[in-house]
Every structure is written in C-alpha cells, then in structure tokens.
Length: 594
Image (cartoon, one colour):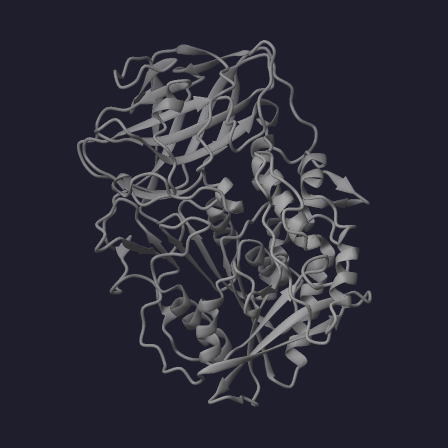
C-alpha cells in the first residue's frame, strides 16, 4: 500500500473554471414500451439567464424516493439526492436528468417490490431516450446513492448502447445476501424500508408507522410541468396502490433460488447475477462506499468480480453521511474523463483508494492496484481456553497464534443479545448514525460492545506490541455442535486500553445454511461437529500497541435481525483445537508503502 499523493484525499485537482452560472429545470412524461408514463426532470445549464443550446453529455438517476418535491418555496429537488453537489457538474457543462421509477413519485405504473425486471428495462429505454434528445450529445452517464446506485449497475446489465460511465455510491451487489445474510432475515431494514417507501409511493405523510410507533417518512412528490391541476399525479398515485409491499416480498422469498412466475426473483434484483452482462456492456464504473456502510462488502465484491474499467473508493463515512473529501470533484474528474475525453489523470492513479481508520489524520489515505491490497496476507488466530482476564463473559477465552488443545465452550443462547440500533444496517434507512465519541475512532457510532460481549462467548488476544494493519475481508471458521437450527453471529472488535470494545466487523450464518445458501435445500443440524464459514465485512484499519483483538459469538441480534424465539433456549458448543479448530483469519498487511 502507498499513501495517496494528494493534499487532503480524493477529488483534489485543478478544476476547470465553471462554464455556466445557473440552470433551468423542465419536467415531462416519457412513455415506456408498455404505455407506462415515467416522470423525468431535465436540468440544463444557463449563462446569464440564457439557456445553453449546444448538445452536452447527460447524467441521470433513477429513484424511488421522488425526483422532485413541492416545498414551501415551490418545486425543488428531493431532499436526499445530494442535489447541491450535482449542480457543480451542471456548471461544468452537463445536463442532469432525474427520473421517478415506475410506481413512484409522479410516474405511473406499479412496482413488484423493488428492482424488478421492468425497472431495469425502463432504465434501458430512458438511457436511449436521453441520447436522442436535441440537447444531448449521446454520451450518457448515471449517478446516485443507495437505490440510485443499484439501478446504475442493473441498467449497465441491460447494455444500453449509449451508457458509457456510472458512479454508483453505496450500492448492493447481491440482494439476497443483504436481506437474508447466511439465511437470517434483516427484518429491521426490510420493515423500515417497506414502511418508508409505501408512504412515499402514495404521497400520504405518515401513512404508516414503523414497529417503534414512529411516523414513516414522506414528502409530496411534484407533478410534471404539464400537470397544471395535479390530476395526472393523483392518477399515478392510484396506480401505486398496486405496488407490492417490500416487507411481504422479503419475508415470502426465503431462499436465493426462490422463484415466482418461473423467474428467480433475487437474480433480477442482484447485479451479482448479471455480472457477465455488466462486463459485456463495457461501462466504466466508479464504486464509492464508506467503511461502516451497509454495502461495504458489496462494493468490494463488485469491484473484484468485474473487469470493466473501474475504480473503488472507501472512505470513513457511513450511509447517511457524505465523505470528508471532495466527492463532487471526484465525480467531475470521472465523467470528464469518460464523457468529455478530458485528461484528468484519474485512470493513471491506482485503482483502489481507501481511508485507513486509526491512521494519522494528516495522512490517512492509502492506495492499491487491487482489493484486497497485494500486501495483505490471511493470518489465523485460534480460539483457546480462558482466561484472558479482560471481561466477565459467558466464556472468557483467548485468541492464539497457535492451535490450542482440543476443547469446547458451552453457550445457552441469550435471546437479548444485540449490537444496538446504531448499526450499519439500520443506517441504510436513515437510522442512528454516529453516537460514539470521536476519540474512539472515525466510524459509525456502534456503542461500546462490552455489554453485548458479556452475554456471549468471547475470545480475546494479548495486547498488541506493535501497530497492526488490517486490510481485506476477515473469514471466521466456527465449529459447532447443536441440535437446533440457530443463527450464529460473529463480531470482530478492538478492545481499547481503557476497556472500550470498538466494533470492527461482523458476519452471520444460520446452521441450516452452513453449506451455502444457493438453493432452498437447506441442511438440517446433524449429530456431531458442523463448520460454519462466515465471510465478514471488509475493513481497512490500523490498531495501535496496547489494544487487543476480540472475537465475540452470539446467537441473536435483536436490533438488526429477526428475533430469536426458542422455548427453551437451545445450547451450542463451540469447538476448538484439533481437527475442529475454530479460528478467524485476518487480512494482516505490512502497511508499508510500495
């Protein structure tokens, strides 16, 4: 790894002077192949009030969260789309288009939950429609975060001829892995997302409550320009009543190969299932994500899976927070290179840039030609007998560089264990963000996990004598004996010298999904040892001398995942040593410059 040679991180460059000082917005309906009318906002640059008439590249986004709203001062962009940042690109000679997907905002039609195949086919048609307009030069890109990032990857999979470059921010790669990781439902995310989009789709503020009794978010979508009396948007909302409930879809389709109407429903919604088509598109892809986003693993897997011209940027942010660097400048460099043939130098730089958590704040950025960085090597730490003397947990075990003697640790499941609501997955729907004091590290504010650790099985290493750089994906090998189909959660933590247990990574898998989750032929528990392989969230961090690594195992996470309800609570045995050696592999890097 090497330090990024920029003053304060990505996006810093000698910008061209803006060409334009204002913009003009218009809104129209575009009719799809099946007659459904889709609402499209078009934002074109102006200079001293005069509309620019020459064709320009077009950047567009495809949103379920309303492209524009009726605010107190008239029609304005939706509040969650990073509008001020995107106006920089308008000033530098781009047309922006913002599109309500079918079944949302002012668009007509109905949606089968999310990311169904009709949406992707719409994206193809919209891309080609934009390329044909008189104010377009036919060079098309896409932008947007979260849902708006996922739609970019799915659109690329449709291979529209005029789509040249995309910039997906914080987007999933595999829909099933996000909603049903290891066969365990993330019901908090599914329920909250479902309530929020239902309220938005129907344009009724506080239509639904979340399971805590809080009002669901909503803001009124704006009609298109021609809809002077609002009759069209009211008609569109009536069609939205046929939208399929997101939570119902998620809880009905339990397996990766779940099918409806002879289609595997998760494949339609997963860029990972369309990787071959995305590669064939040749579209240039800039993946952007934060270390404590819910889609960190997805962005890394997408980058590793594709051979397109691409970049990967990971910063210290989370889903509801924009990075502390010039993101607009980085986007301008990207699209200038691919849509205007301007030599910005962006493709001459290393493919991967990441913020190393815990590093010197004056020099935190690292770069690499690949992910994980070539200097990272997987190194095993093995579960050992206690006691580490650091915590009064159900089992205060140790983490050792050598395989321990054979043994086991018994755990009666505690159904109350949880990492709390300030977690990377609740933040995907706008849940709690940073609550941990900043001196505990730049990261999403998970609480001190020591209280949760005390209710589980813990394995804690000796204090570090030197800096420890981690860059890559931890992999847990957990050997278990149990007669119940229990979920297993594994947390990797840094125990700071003051005793604070700082979240680093996590992963989970249900016993019946131990052989993978590719089909609905799950494996019942057997009488004897069973190995769970758990691919954990990636990380890029440095731990300082005096800190300790800790692995905690529980069988419930009542905040982010479906509640565990056994009567009576079952018992598991975690095995260590010998041929059933539970351990964790860590991506340890030298941290040296290359």
